[in-house]
Image (cartoon, rainbow, N blue to C red; front, side, top):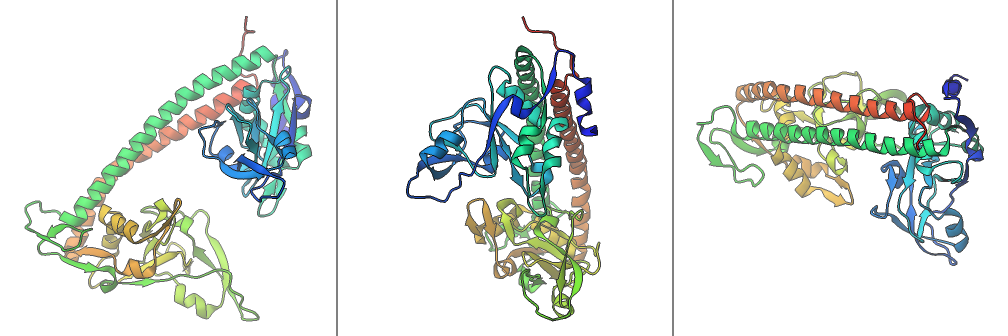
Length: 441
């Protein structure tokens, strides 16, 4: 089997064994639904494992209940490894996390498998790194089955082949990878801070351009709107509803009975990024032609997200008819400008400014990590309005300056990607014996 080619290249002192020969494993069925004979516990759930390499008591665990039997069976111990057993994506199957801290009430939750290495055969930290290594973990991805949600059969977890060096070497490899991944992670974190600074500078540049224009000597006046402040005196403060039409989108889930339907592509929130569109995965929908006509995008529409995660609120981009025809989801507003008054590029630039962001956040309905805004509040959004010719000139200069920042962002993102690739390759090489290890004294 080609995905196990690494087995033949293992050092002579290493073995290849099924997981069940080196560890015990169970599939958790502890959920958050309470029952009469249960006691309060902290539940380590799917997101705790997926988002964290290491399980510690500093994580914000879900509060749940479990029976004494469940606590005994699924309670987490130091050096246990929890993996994602079910997921909506093959790539998210078998993601591991190592338990470094635990407590009597910390229990492995639903959608996870708990693997407990036998200490005389397998080191927990080494097992964790094995399950991080793509050449090893691919076995779980291939074993997963499903249509819209994928799960690993329990027997396939036990059957997966692991590299098994002598125990002392396992610990040495795990210690080495802890040091090297920490070093690479620090480099990635530093580069990500650079990305944050570039994003802040870009937003500040855009904000300055759309509230002050090109002439630093232009007389200013108070716009009378808190989110605008002072603007050039010859500009007009207005609201979006006076210069554009805000159009709602297509809602899924309707039953059309025997009505004749047509299949059309439609944009979702995931397609509308901050300042650009991601069209790598565009979904289609079946809809009556008459209803589709009311939700059809036109070139020049400025797309704005209704919400979702807080960072998606009002996020937008210009539609250039990259796909035609195309609908838009009801959670994506299509703002169609009155071209005699305002340019699409000006509306788009304004949505990226601090003023627009502050307005949207002030009017949004907020919940934990989620936010949404109504079309009524979108229509009321204040907007500064220079003459059309000046709008074009300002945006052209702004894009020129932003282009320099975007080049820095692209190169920084490329560096981050290389560092992450180096990290993954290092883990895979270490646990499959491609790095030569002397036996620890």
